[in-house]
Image 1 (cartoon, rainbow, N blue to C red):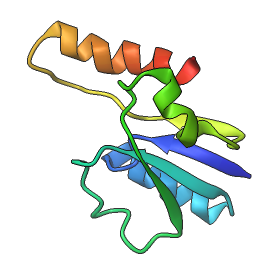
Image 2 (image 1 turned 30 degrees about the vertical axis):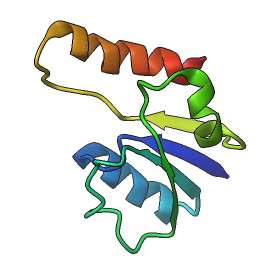
Image 3 (image 1 turned 180 degrees about the vertical axis):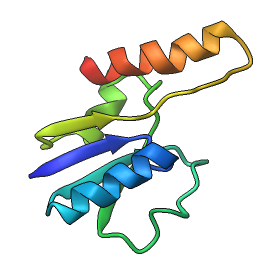
Length: 97
């Protein structure tokens, strides 16, 4: 089964990727260009460059062909409430679209 993980460069997301690989899943991750890859190096994953805040049509390559999406991307702090909302709520809506 092919799955997509957002937020894979973070603590939760990277451990989720490890668990999914251990279960034999084909894992694709959506990563921003600026995201650290230190916990993902050497893993048999497909990396798609992108950001959950992108327009839904720009996320098409990330979700194409996957059976499940594990959405772990999000902010726990931001410069203002608008940025927090754009990533956490807006990013979720973009993936759903």
